[in-house]
Each structure stands twice: as C-alpha cells, then as structure tokens.
Image 1 (spheres, rainbow, N blue to C red):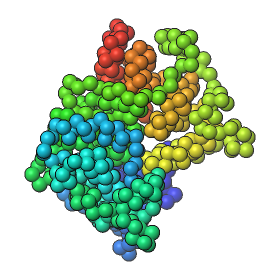
Image 2 (image 1 turned 30 degrees about the vertical axis):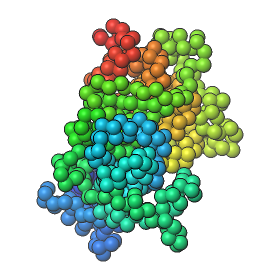
Image 3 (image 1 turned 45 degrees about the vertical axis):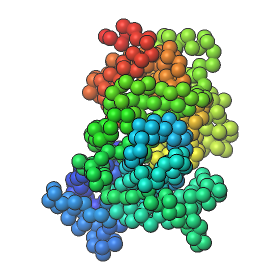
Length: 489
C-alpha cells in the first residue's frame, strides 16, 4: 500500500483520516489512499486561496460539528468536472430510439422530465435538451424540462451561463456545433436559446435524501447519472440506486456509464440492451429485458470445438496459456516491437499508478488514451489479468466487440477464477441472444462464487458481495431457460 507521508505532515494523518470519513459520509466519495491524497491536495489549494495553513484548515474541518456543511470551495476542488457534449453517443442513440418514444407515448400531452444527476458544467443536460427537441420535432418545448444537478456550485454557475469552448465539443462535427450553438467570435460558443429554455440547474447532493427536483414534487421520466457512481462508496452507491428506483415511476429509465453497470444487477432495475449498450428500466420485471438491435458482438470462441470445451469449466481453463502476440496486437494496436515495450518488469507501485491513470482517463471519456496506457502496461507484463479486463470494458464502451471478447478470453487464460470476466462474457452473450453460451459463462461464474464466502467482495464488481452476485447470476440463468442443478448447491 502506498504511503503519502512524504507529502502529508505526521500530525495531519489522523485528522485527515477523520476528514476522509466525513467526506465519504456527506458526499458519498469513497475514502481510500488515493482519496486521502486528493483531499490533502484540495486542502492545500483551499488554504492557499484563503491565505491559511493546510493543517489549520484541516483541523477546522475535521473538528467541525456534524451538522455543519463542508465549504463549497473545498467540495468543488474534490469533484471531477470532466465532461463534454454528446458523450457516449451509442447510449444516447439507443435512448432516443428505444426509451424516448415509449416515454413520449405514455405521457400523451403531459410534460416530459429528465434529470441529469452529477451534471458538472452542464454539457449533459444541454445535450439531452438538444436530443429531445430534435428527436420529437412536434413536441411543445414548454412541455420539456431537463434538470441538471451537481454538488459543485461553481460548476453550476458555468452551466447556467451556457458558454463553452472547443474542448467541450470534442467529437462533434462543425455542422453540429453550428446547429446547436452561437459562435461568439472569441473562441467560445453559447447554447442556442431554444435549448436553454428547456434546461435548468440546481444544487443537489446525491448523498443526501430526500431529493426535491421540481417544485410540484413530480418525478423524472428518466435519470442520467453517468460516470458519477464510480466515485461513491459501495454503501452510498446502493443508497443512491435505491433512491433512483423509488423516485422513478413504473417504466422510468436510468442511464449509467458502462463501467458502472455491475451494481445495477441487484438494484431492482431491469436491463434493456441493444447494439452493445445497456439502459435500465423500472418495470417490476414485466417488460422484455432485451430489444432487438444490430448486435456486432463476435463469438468468444472461434471454433465449435473451443465452444464445446466451455461446457467443462475445469477442462477449458486448466493450463492458463499466455497472451499471444497476435491477440495482444488485436486489442492494443501494439505491433509488439521491442522499442515499444519498455522495462520488462516495472515496479509494482508503478503498475498500480499506471492502472489508476488508465481508469482515470477512461472515467473522463478519454478512452483511446486509456487504451494506449493499458497497452503499454500489458506490453511490459503479459501475466497480469487486470489490465486485460479493463481493456475489455473500454472496448465494449467503444463498440469494439471483437477486441473486447479477445481481452476477456485472455483474462481468463491468465486467471480462470476472475469472476467478473465470466460474468461479462455471459452478459455479452445474453445481449446477442445466445442463451446457451450465456448460460455456460454464468454457470462458470456461479461455480466460482459458490466457493467464496458469501460476504466477501468480488473484485471489479463495484462492491457486490459473492452472495449478492450469485443471486444475480442465478436470476440471469433462469432467463436463459438453461438452469441446471449445479447452481442449487
């Protein structure tokens, strides 16, 4: 475990731990060694702005009465503000084609309400307004309301101004920018008035309930909370998801980032998948889980013989083959040249830092950069399954299903007991309608989970315990109509 004592005075360590727990309780942000470093850096900047000492600010916050709110400048410095317009377009397209027509038909002439939770500087709620008004051209704009909320008042101030620079438009074509924005001539652009009129912003802390969004207390038809839950502790994440489920009406929709889906499996929401994208619906389990779509997910195995071997968990995964040069190049883009590999055995701490960097890049939407970073890690050490698994998740978000399958298969070559790799393969197979294949992967996951203590957390599952994930796996197996007695031990 890395120590941060080189930058934190010894007398600050204990009050910093106390403040970390306060941050976790009040903001939901999980406390860890990395978060401890973030908190100390935020304290240092806050103290500098106030012309005070970091230790003095720390002691004041750690010793404050429980009912006292954390100061806005300190909270703003802790929160991540990286976002951009039309982020995760495949998810937005699926929402507009699958969820939105159903929502609009169900509301008749009633108002449509959408909540962007954790909206930062406002790119997502404005994106939703742009999407809604163009997808429903006959809709009265007065009947559309998009609410963006965040805990950072300074980010919300920028959001309300509706003025952005080109960094917020990455991935947008020039004609799209002209359609939705006015060029102010100084390198900045303002959101066009028709989209500003349907978008509002409000200060809200997801970690504190009850939430009151609209003045009449009515619920949203859909909640977008993407790249927010990953920063929460498992307990707060579960509480927030329960809050969403309670708040949404029957048939309401929830959108999270692809890297945040694991906790949803036991949340009461039903997954609805198409084209490699999954949204979640509150429907009491009565509506179909999967809508047809242009799935491109390649089979995990290239031959029928290899597919048959999946029937035997022990047989297929005995031996643990190394990652091949061809498959490494397939999902990293690295040709394998010696000049690209760097040191053969990087220090363990360096690898942890690089993995955290890759996660951070992916969280901020810089997935291609994250892939490059993971490719460098794998080029140095091809025996570590974790970077391969992270590669698979990012490739899934990008729609690179063949590469995702290769990365997941090699994750299991190196670590046959990697539960979430089995689970992810099963979910992908279920999305493409391959029930028997999905059942095999879920059965493999279930066999491993049965060997674990029920209260033990499953790595890379977002805080789910073995017992909770096993319950989810059993439920998914029942949907494949291939349930066997093996999972009833």
